[in-house]
Amino acid sequence: MPVTHRVPSVGFMNETRTAIITGTSRGLGLALASGLAYDGWKLIMDARDAEALAAAVWNLPGQHIAIAGDVTDPEHRAALVEAAIRAGGPDLLVNNAGILGPSPRHLAEYPLAALPEVYEVNVFGPLALTALALPALRSRGGAIVNVTSDAAVEPYPGWGGYGSAKAALEQASKVLAAEEPSVRVWWADPGDLRTRMHQEAFPGEDISDRPLPESVVPAFRKLLANRPESGRVRL
Image (cartoon, rainbow, N blue to C red):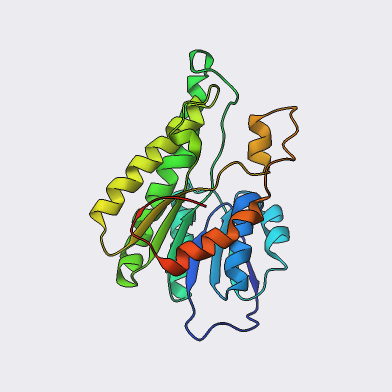
């Protein structure tokens, strides 16, 4: 069963907004969650590691619920949406959780047995969570942010598994945007960041020249404030 961790409210904006953000124990997910927390959003957050998730979100201001679990688990997805509905939302869904899979690995040598998990986490889980959240998002004129990558549109050697999964997520986002005019759908490319996943893609290399995940938070805030038409955005 998911483990729930709560922090009491310390004050909100007059009109409270609620967001579901996946993959918030570190990296980009935690940076985006921190930005929203300081802006007064109620947050429903997840990650697979319960201890890491609780430690990561403990000092965030405001009210949040952290539910440990995997986005590929139907019961976990339902728990996230139910928590958001109880909190008054959701107004925003950020599908950030993802895995790199075997990398760097050329496609001719790619272990196909590993590919289903890459697609389950990066494509199928986010789509299933989106489907559950859509009724509430429609009613509230909400928004969906699907975190993607330039590997979805550029042919980087060694990134075929992850890149193809992100390409699938982007195409699904395009179709979703066409089908759901009452909801904003953005597939957002944060660029190369100094994260553990990015380090895994470059084993043994120094990635200290990459910007920290916090560097994209201002662009994320601007995206939510300006609410441009659905489409691909660069954070």
